[in-house]
Image (tube, rainbow, N blue to C red; front, top):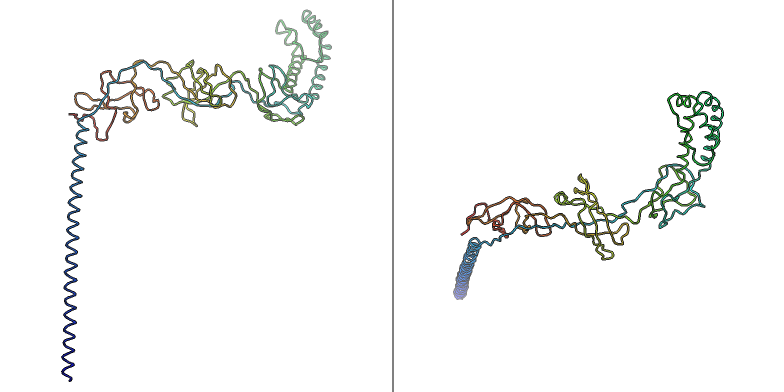
Length: 394
């Protein structure tokens, strides 16, 4: 019985071992077959990829050779061209002043017409400042001066009879109000020295100084214009150096703008200007008034001032336009994209590329006006990175 179970056990173990062995063999064969199939697929895919790459490279090489062998160039003819330079800027009055007080005092309420939009004629008073104290002081000094002249008059008549008669008439017409009259003219140094020794000249010039100061209490319009800023209220205290407002001439306007250094070389005073007003859509005419001679530190350009000749404009408007420069003779207009290193271009000559230097006068949008070419030069407009000086073209 024991031997029977022993034999059974051996058979069972043998059978299990056989199946394990067989399973391992099959698994190994399956993995090997899978690996072979994968390798075959990879090999076929690589062959297709390299074949396509080779074909593509061959096509690209053919296209490149074709492009190298066929280069289009254009012969440009010189022309007489009047360049138009674009600009933009703000319109402002060419006669604009900032009103500043030169004296201290209180602005007079009853005489206040200092308001934005208020128009004044030349010589009309913009602002009155209380001046009663200095007016009384001036009259006091004039009275003292008159007293001095009366005391000295007998001596003047005795030593200088003709001058004495002139001073007698001067005293008779002397007025405490209004500006003081000019003193009688002296005929020689003795008469002048006599008046100076009696302090007549000193007192006279002192009175003139006070009259000038009194005149500053009435700030007058220097020209016909309108108030655009009012920085003071009626009855307010005014101090020396205080800004009081802004006054402009509404009939004369200009545009302040800037251009590059190269552009400024083509612009001259008197050049015509076409101005576009964005707010109204109108096109008005202008003229170059003046051009700066130094570099603006903020814009690194040249300042330019344009007079507006006609049209309805207002201070502060934004405008654009074109400056019509003098005609440039025998210049060439070429694409900016064809220019290399800012001043060079390829031309096709005797089946080879030649790098030629240019004198670039001005750039205008995608074109440039240049000198340094000949009418029979064939210009290569489409550059490639493999171009070089002396490259042979079949």
